[in-house]
Amino acid sequence: MRAVKVLLVLAVLTAIAGFGAYRYWQSRLEAPIAVDEPTLYEVPRGAGYNLVVADLAARGIIDDEWAFRLLTRLEPEAVPQLRLGEYMLEPGMSGRELIALLGSDDVVTYPLTIPEGWTFRQMRELLASAPKLEQLTAEMSDEAIMAELGRESEHPEGWFFPDTYRYHKGMSDLDILRQSHKRMESQLEEVWAERADDLPIDTPYEALIMASLIERETGAPGERREIAGVFKRRMESGMRLQTDPTVIYGMGERYNGRITRADLQEATPYNTYVIDGMPPTPIALPGRASLEAAVNPQPGNTLYFVAKGDGTHHFSRSLREHNAAIRRYIINR
Image 1 (cartoon, helix red, strand yellow):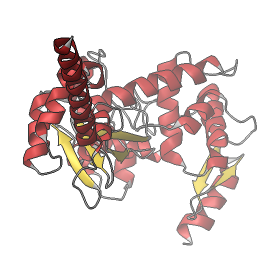
Image 2: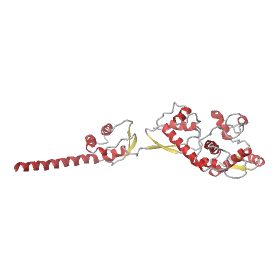
Image 3: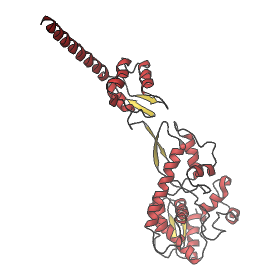
Image 4: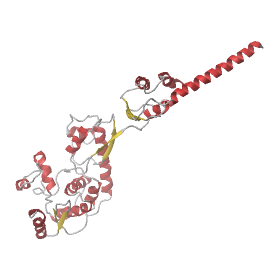
């Protein structure tokens, strides 16, 4: 009987000791991490849980490394699959909250804005200068990039949607290119499905070309559909488009901010003063509004337009009116 009592006492003491040890272990996990201000922490590529815990302990961010290693044995479901990237550690955060953060989608991200009307070359330069973005395409040609995106042998101009994208440490320039390309494909598909019935263009790609011309001609929202209408009526009547941005694009890096009479007469594949119809490819990255204008031109009877110098244009129905507008807005100025 006495032996039974002793065993019972020992069992109770063991249970108390075990419970106390468990509570102490839990308290170590719930203890605040040692940061006094928001601190950036990076989970590197290929780092496992134990390696990250050791690094956190070495940096003095957590105490009691053993407590976090024990988590894998006693509560394996609480150990997340760590995600590559940067995380912002906040003062007062517990060790448990820290571990959960490192396995979440709450990574630090950076914005990258591709403006409407930029060329693909400008987009590549922007990607190359983006901080903390892995550069995979630096040595790749435009053709190689398009092949990587499943668009082998296609010209890259126009195929990337201008917008603000967010990326995190560990992402690459190819990731942004892939996102932007898919966005343009989906945007073009949407607007083409809502196109007018009487367009002088027959394919979504021709709509993309037209949208790029509109994008480069004006930044005024209210003018896009009217410019599209001018281009539509010119194509229907057999007139050349005669839009300066195509001349500039055809000049390439030779363009120095001015267009001469000789430039207007130069026979390049893009010079719409020389060629009939549209150029063979887009000349810029058009935004949604220009895509919509390209497939829904504004009805009317204007055939000409000239820049007024304030970001807008004067539209004319006749060559005589157009020449008067040129004298007013360009020659006199």
